[in-house]
Length: 427
Image 1 (cartoon, rainbow, N blue to C red):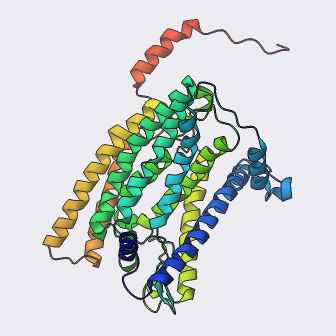
Image 2 (cartoon, helix red, strand yellow):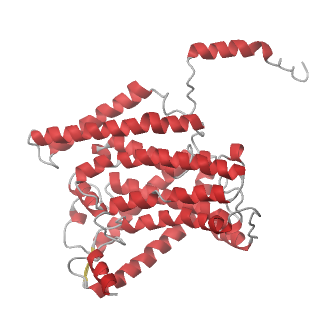
Image 3 (cartoon, rainbow, N blue to C red):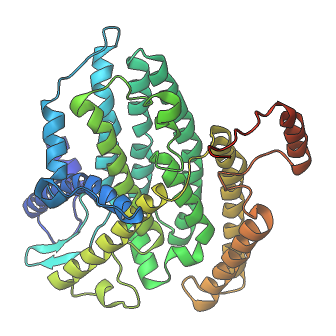
């Protein structure tokens, strides 16, 4: 017991709050954050339907409580439906898989700071559940566990379609996980720390990383879409090809857990993009929220700033889903291995070289010339990437690897075998 107490003292605050105060406020924050998180994930299912209806110029859910109680109706329906278990399934793993799919997204939130510290009369309370000094490494480690839930779900079902979905998902997530991790290394080079709070403070007192590290943000965003299995990267769930994918044999609440995990991962990815590249809870164009005294008003306003940034990216996820078509699987793998991975490695070298050069020239970290050099690097990289290298061919889902000459040959061969068009009635 003494060892546990010593460990808790190490992980707790090093200054003002007492151990008892820290324990009480940690429990309160856990209850508040995870309650808001779970309720928010349920409401996102309604938001997705409403946004898709708005984009398609139709009515969304409007019957159950004028649409607002639709998530409650869905939850009740899933709870009362019959649980089915395949006869040849590995039941322990079959039951464990939905939990393994959802828990990592939930735990990741423990190290994401969601507001400025609050200077209470009991001491300064950090607005993060676990202010770990290695918070960023914790995120990389825990988020990589989510793929186990999907793979185990496909294998334990003893269904060939579910197994195919699980294999496709594991290949996809592992492929893009590498690019996602590599894209965040420039963030660590600028922050000089792996603590999430330090990364936020570095952006607050200097410049948001989206300006300094634009290409890294683009790579991270694309990889986040692939990691969350959202369109245009929803190949593991491709209904037209794999029935339903890795959760073919699931029913009732276990089936819903995979979709809850998808929305939970989407919220977590949005929060990470806001934290790593858009200053986290920092209010732009002011240092008022970053300096003492840490009042309750600052905490509330910075919480609103963080929520606004996160919800913007959640909306962006939904916007892309109802706008772009699905990739082919060969395009999916080519984009991850042939473009994003080499690009992220080359970008690490470029950013590190520019930082070393600016340091050698005597420009201080955080100075205007230092950030101007990084911004010019990003402008050049974006122009080269999208206007010279890509030009709508590498990233577009409609792109074919065939050149125009081979395409014309195929058309010429298939032309004699085409069925003649039937005349319209009345001709």
